[in-house]
Image 1 (cartoon, rainbow, N blue to C red):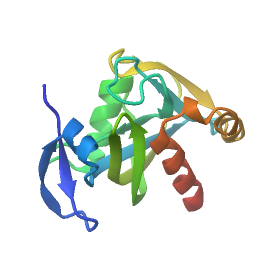
Image 2: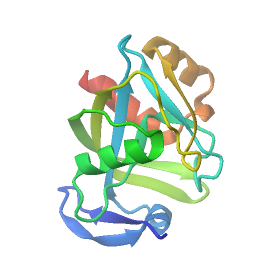
Image 3: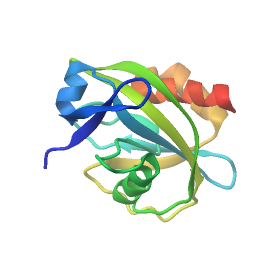
Length: 169
């Protein structure tokens, strides 16, 4: 099934739709959301992207990153994707939004108006193997150390979003 992203201007006014991979080739600004999930110890959930993903396979990233569909709110999209990817439901709250552009390799770009959500969850994931290879919780200190030692193990957008997240909290 072809997936489309919602193209927008910096004020989040809709400009149209474009097939997702074409938008990433063209580097056009589109709607996106990122979800950070934490356990009761304050550790962040990371997911390792499935090996079959067309870009950034086998790299670690935050709990969920994706795109709302046409007519879907950012929150509705975020809740849909945590169910589709992780097999869970969680209460989410939107914390901030920002625009970034990242070269993800292979001639592809993420250029997103990204709405960032935060929630809590402990265990019992039902991972979608087409999307997620594995998940793990990690402390902020250990995450910073891992990124410094092995930046290529993490998605480009996650490193950008994580820094933005730290500026807000």
